[in-house]
Image (cartoon, rainbow, N blue to C red):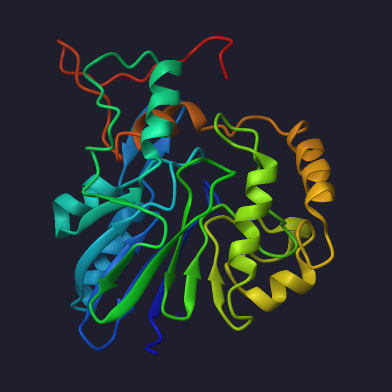
Length: 287
């Protein structure tokens, strides 16, 4: 089994960790969960975070195969189309994106011009699909609960878990978004925790709970021993009780309104209007 080379990129504004995953034998790579910088107050975007990833790929003479989204993020905008325009790669997400598109297409009254069939993406992954990054073997694991389209990507001995799991002291993802479900999330997490104990897990978000330094790498064994929400011995019913109680105290992510409108379109902005400007909608009393 080959071991991928992992380069993390931390975005402090959103708490996101994006990754470049490299096959050292072929210099092929994938980008996972990229970030497009967005200032909510001004409505301006920038590409500082994505440009750092592109620069790293260029400096290391890598060839991009894939631009992977583990799910439709609610806390940051995806830079997938920008990266694809600059250096190529196929944009992929779980096939249940069509459920997310249907749900949020209605919330934002997106109109008939917004296709709800996942066609904005180059690849819709099914559960247990396999693909390659150079000679690295990759497999998808459908892990709904946070969102219907969540996918863990198992690349050799390394899994990229999106928002399904946080670091052990951070617990798990919330399950109260449209299409989310705490019981489903628990069952999805058990799929991940049934992987070999030495499997490395790379998470998508960390906020340094308790004031510790931001971290992003753990293992299945560490999660089973120490995760505050789902360590071994925590029953499904207890998890659901804990998760639902915590979710009831959480406010919506500050970027959920722009993020979901953009990310359900594979990172593209809504169509320009007749004045040449892109607009995002704010649904009143809906979320």
